[in-house]
Image (cartoon, rainbow, N blue to C red):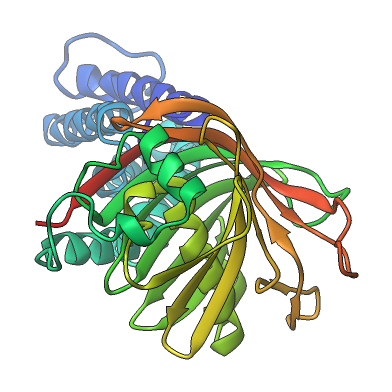
Length: 377
């Protein structure tokens, strides 16, 4: 997930820079460089050093907001404290600067919550680093297991450009789009990244969205045969969480979907069984622990993936319970990502009750922006 300075970040950086310049008035008064009208009393030279240190710390904060947005809080919190001490030494003349410090402190505390060691992002990074450090094991060699695949799946691999390659051991992906909680509710823009391991099956998914203009962090974890979800508003307040057998079964369907959509080179893995249906569709089944889930996977005439429909997905209802609902991810816009061809635009849809499920409604619209795969062997 790329970390670029947001418009609010630029505004906070500008505030820190202006605040630093204002502190230079205390430096000028303390060192007798000029008579500063804003200071009714004298500023001793020793306190001039304090004002200079605060100005430099605030300038460093402004730079860090732009150059190192993940960790600027580590510079910003001490800078605000130093600035406030300087202001306290000339309270009658400089008290107004406290307002700027309050704004910067709140921004720094939010950055700490979002990026600091206790954040969902930090947990994701630690777990992803641990997965990346694990050795890649498994059978190597091109064409592993391809002979048992139904004809439309083999055409998909040929279309993607991975039919002659080595099977995938793990992969990373990035995407962006919008999401909503139910039909008729407002859409929320999001960016996301994920790390998957094929064997053993593991999935880490980190999303940043905005709800009512406020940031929401969401982390999905599937590891050691169990799945969990946690969402935090403003990176602090937990607004949703889920785990247990139902959550694990729901995420097992997501694992299968990830392999179909993001890692076609993994579809020959022995953990996936295939049943041909016709020239353009096949049924895929994945077993992880006690859960076996399946989906009907559809392709177009060229071989591109067009849809994934499963009746094994469980949806979290408003009361926190899980209900089985038909779930699909129609796809479009073929393109090359990470050296392979994929259908790069898609939706996630919940369908209604009944045998056909109806058209349902899309709750996710997304575009795949990056995929990197590590082959076996």
